[in-house]
Image (cartoon, rainbow, N blue to C red; front, side, top):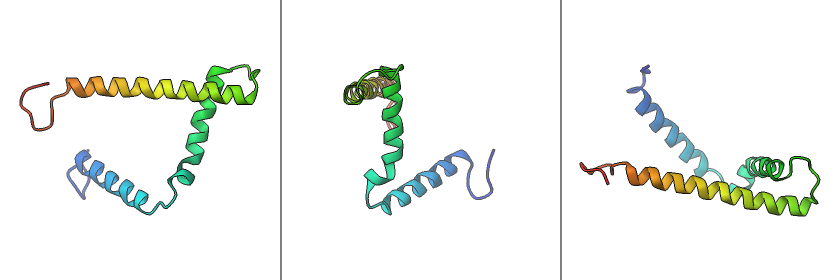
Length: 95
């Protein structure tokens, strides 16, 4: 579906990206801005490593950090694999 101000999805994505960059340009302390999301994500991994809530908090947090790191590494590996398969933006031959 096209919108009246631009050329549809591509224009909407560009406007959204510009808005995000403007917002981050006004953010002095990135840690404060992302603290709630960071905390929620770590709590998710704490529930994953200790669903019964029986481990001491320090150990549960340490295990959760490892689980989060493993998750991020798996995402990075998948992303790299996709980039290897995808043709470069200006190449005519796939990699």
